[in-house]
Length: 163
Image (cartoon, one colour):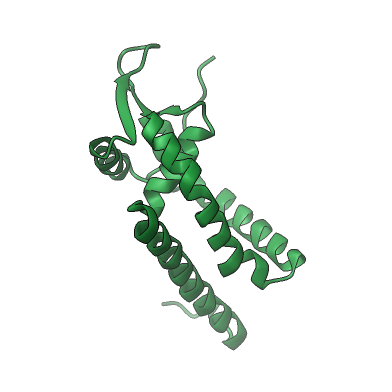
């Protein structure tokens, strides 16, 4: 540590620790709700959401990038979901090299049933606890954080879109 380290003051330290604790508890609670009611983890739910927002399918690499997860983590998650009949993997019709994760009808049905529970949890455990201006500020803060960190995230491969 050098003399020029900008240490957190008491208020910053308190806010930092509250953020860490709150995010851990929030993710754990949302995950527990989904597991208890639907035997679905929060990351698996997020996969279904991402697929539903992209006509039910995405290349595995794009899915990993969208969730800021490593390729291997997405592969393991998709394998579990494939065994449960929620997704299937197919070769990319565009080039035959890429692998596409595609939501099945069972996956879609589960997402439709699980979404109200998840959204209710997000509202109960976060959104409705704070003023709308404060929640909007959280969004601005984490957009700035994401913008700064996405460029150097080891799980995200920055690619130039095909022409």
